[in-house]
Image 1 (cartoon, rainbow, N blue to C red):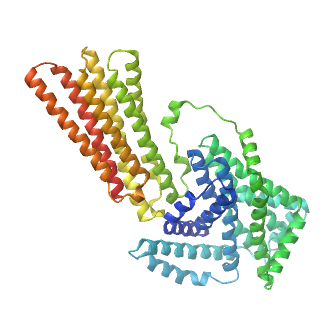
Image 2 (cartoon, rainbow, N blue to C red):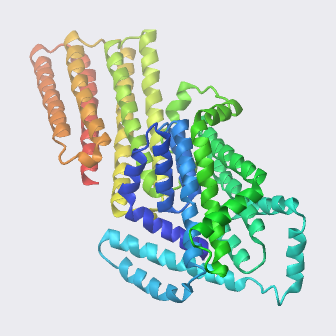
Amino acid sequence: MFLYGMNLMSSGLQKAAGNGLRKLLASITSNPIKGVLTGLGITSIIQSSSATTVMVVGFVNAGLLTLAQAIGVIMGANIGTTVTAWIVSIFGFKFDIATLAVPLMAVGFLLSLSKKGRTRDIGEFVIGFSLLFLGLAFMKNSVPDLNQNPEIFAFIKDWSGHGFGSVLLFLLFGTVLTLILQSSSATVALTMVMLSMGWIEFPMAAAMVLGENIGTTITANIAAAVGNTMARRAALAHTVFNVFGVCWALLFFKLFLGLIAWIVSSLGLDSDPSQTTLYQLSMLHTVFNIINTCILIWFIPVIEKIVCTIIKDKPEKDSDKDLRLKYINAGLVSTPELAVTEASNEVVRFAELMKKGLGYVKDAVNKSDKSDDFEFLRKKLVRYEEVSDSIEGQVVNFLNNLDKGAMSGKSVGQTRSMLRIVGELESLGDSGEAISRILTRKNEHDIKLLPDHISSLNNMITLVDNAYDAMIFNLKHPDEIISIDNAIKAEVAINTERDACREKEYSNIENKGEAYFEGVFYLDILDELEKMGDYMINVSQAILAA
């Protein structure tokens, strides 16, 4: 219930702050401090450093972030995840918030019935918040009383009686527990329950929290296994960051615990003995990550060099790059709201790839004979049709796998729009391949296009290229699009040119009675180019309707 509540709370926050999250992500620059603040902000909102790190790994995999930028964001994510510990320590133990859980859920339910999307999202957050603390209350009540179960006390005491060896033992326990639960926040909450019930002393709880910082890096490494070299490096950088921190914390363990006690005392948080150790644990979690970040932020280039040395570049074929998604990966779906940004970038790349295919269409038209050059271009157009099929399938699969319930209404609309857009872009690949087949049939019948035909087709291709530019501009600036006049103007120009060329050709065939078969192939190519214009105006209309 605790984990589900955290998930629901995170989902509500993500939807309520959807556009804000995307703007926050877009603010990342080469400035490492800004990267740290971005990671801190995003993780504070979505309440999961694992989700933030997996998302960052996905962006590095896509080339949206450099490795150095990603390392800064990961550092901030480690600080941001400590917010959960403070929420739990302040509200979960000092107040009996479980008694308010049901009334809060009722409030959340009423808010979720609202017609306003933002209000519904806040209602989901309130319900998740209630379930989180209800789950925490159940965990506390389920822990056996040590006074009534002396054998448990003896077992725990035996674990705690080995000096520094016990510290290492509990550090390992915290690592394994986080690996199992896949949530450092949940493991920290469990550690707090054990500490508050007297199962373990503060030093052992501190060791568990240090172990949890190592355990949380496993999630990103698992996600990066399906990514490229840069993604695996980003995940390894997270591990290097946390392992280094745990090493210095263990080296100065007693001094570090003394520093935490002094900070808590100085802030006046030691007035309630039952809460003091919980505040100390939350403070340790926060201070550990702040100190670690303050040390390592100056050594980002060194960390980058270390991970690049351990994980070396692997050569990749150009053909493989075309087929593989660049900005999204089905194995890296973490934060649906931010995944919309990844998908949007992939759609833009898809459109640019199809425009590149138009260049091969132009070359094929101008070299439409049985030469080796034409055969090369024909194979290129067939290849682009295969690439368009592959990318469409992968993007559709990615979008369909997104949790629509964890997305704002606007993002759901954008997802539907993108599903339509990738279908239209795939049709552009089909048209390019269809033109290659028309030219091949023409060659098989030893027919050559007339110079006027080639000149008219080049003019038509120029107009189609202009339509591509308008479509790609609209895809890149969806939030700024009020009208699609640029796309409509390009489409009208294509239709006007096609009609004029068609009328002229019909007139030539009728009056001169020659070049009939050349005209048939010419008109077929003209129709395919006009179809491309139709697909592109459909894309712009889908953007406007999102």
